[in-house]
Image 1: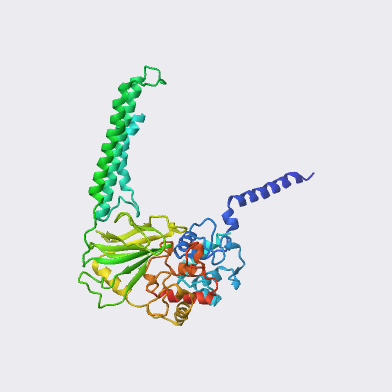
Image 2: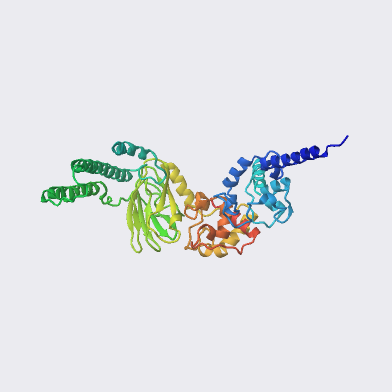
Length: 130
Length: 343
């Protein structure tokens, strides 16, 4: 007749612990930034270097990115704004990378003629930096 | 076991020849560089032979004296022969042989100047290379006098394949040294004196060079390239370089031209065909025909170019080019747009 609350509580606790453990096993899944449709992180990293973004922007751990003209991008995935102008969303970031002057006409950030796919790749890469 | 390893050494050495990079004296592309490489190999093999001989003698000596007290010092006069032959006669013969081989191989005076030689003045600056083609240096026929204008560039020396180029080397400040390992030995650039170096490339290519005499803070960022091209391509390049600067393509570039030619840039840089006539820094008339900025320090792309204009000291601390943080974003964009058009 007596209820057995103790085992139920134990299972619940175990379940909770397991969930936390699983979360720890896949930090990428838990911490990934916004998804950029069609963006490839590895290609984006290569394009970031090839375009010379590092001439102005520093990224920790990237040898070619030690510039200090513009803001460092080591934790770009945590930014709330782009250029202090628009919310940091994938769509805005792609737009910013392709034509910075469209968002902030007087910015020194050059329009490097980046195509849509490359912009998506670079955006995907930048959101991994957090 | 150890002796086996020593014997293997000469077998390993030829493998070293296979791994030469852009600055290797072993990856030769001209007759003078071949002579340097041959001398190098001669000295390496001679050293290997002497090293092997010493090893053999060492082994024999250890065997011979193994039975005796190993710490005993043998002062008997009969050892003198080894000292005289091994310590004086043999080194004398070896050094003498190297001296003669080096003299025959490298100690040649350059041929008397020939009117048909392409003459290029190379002036060292802290820390870049000024390259000035003598008027009339157009071609073997001496054309170019009619074409007129000077050809001045920086950090990239274009030469026609197979033709001897006479370089007249001097410096504007301290001693530098001109070194393209795959094409020629080193030659110093001395203040108040002109050195004469002959250069020729047998194959087209981009041969890397560096300053080889410590010259101050940015000595390590004083690189250059010798671009060897087929004669026709070289003539096209020379003709393009001889022309004045291109007109700006749009209103942004026109605004940039005003900023560059009427502002601080003009006090150090020349852009032929504009009021910019400074002589402290490199000629920018055809800036975008060059692959790098700041003497091989960074790639010459629009992004790097803009970063260089506003923050040169971050890339090359101590260089005479100052950081120019007073330009705002729109001005920087305009300046870069103008410079990007200087092809």
